[in-house]
Length: 65
Image 1 (cartoon, one colour):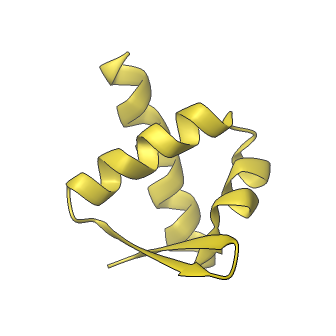
Image 2 (cartoon, rainbow, N blue to C red; image 1 turned 90 degrees about the vertical axis):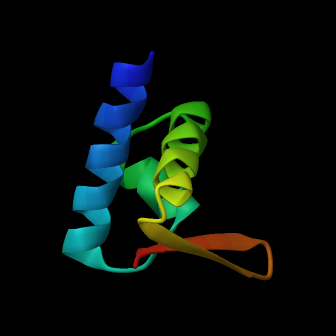
Image 3 (cartoon, helix red, strand yellow; image 1 turned 120 degrees about the horizontal axis):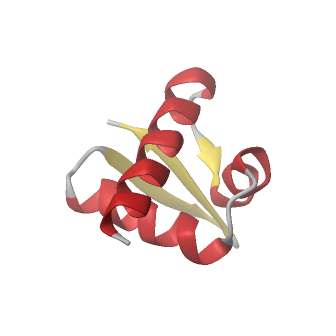
C-alpha cells in the first residue's frame, strides 16, 4: 500500500509540475485516480511539505511549493 501511495504522489507531483495549480477534481480526472487514492497521496505530499493546499468556495486547489 505504501508503494502505491508513493507512486500516486509521484504522479500528482509530475502533473502539478507540468500544469501548475490544479483543483483536486481536475487532478482526479486527469490522472484517472480514485478519490481515495488521490486524497491519500495529496496527504502524503502535504505531510512532506511538498505542496500547498488552498480552498476557494467548494473547490480545493493544490500547487507545488
